[in-house]
Amino acid sequence: MVQNHRLPITDYRLLAIQRLYRYLFWIGYLGVLITAFIPIKGSFNKITFGPESFRIRLDHLLHFTAYFLICIYYLAGQKRGFLLFSANSLTKFILLLLFLATVTELIQLWVPERAFNVFDLVSNAGGVIVGVGVVGMAQRRRGIMA
Image (cartoon, rainbow, N blue to C red; front, side, top):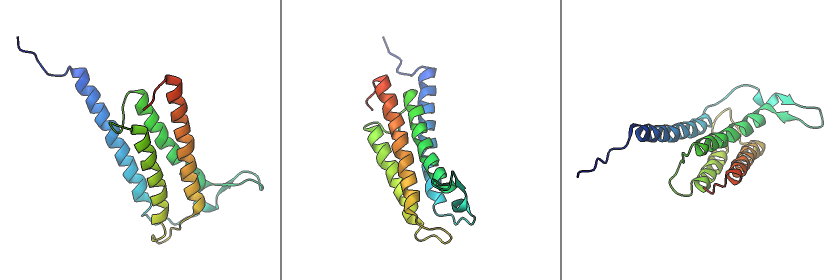
């Protein structure tokens, strides 16, 4: 008897969604990297929130939010069984994100109208740390070690 080695339609769809998940991650990753090369005129760094004693600049909030949302994207994929990498997915994800957070700030040393700001780097890292913390809590809650 000859066995048919074709995957069911649902498996093909699942593989296509997995591939789309990975493509969207890399497109977003490159998008963040490219924005570091774009000279931005304006006053994002002059807009602040909060009382006089505790001010948060809008650009720091944007940095934090961007990296946090990338972590939530990772978590959303993980909840559906998608991984960005076949082995050590979370470790590679964290290293890639920290690399991106650092490089996007260092690049700005050479981009006109942009400037390296240690607080932007801290905001990037803060978004990664809080986001990875949420991912870790979700993994422990579900008993996943990825």
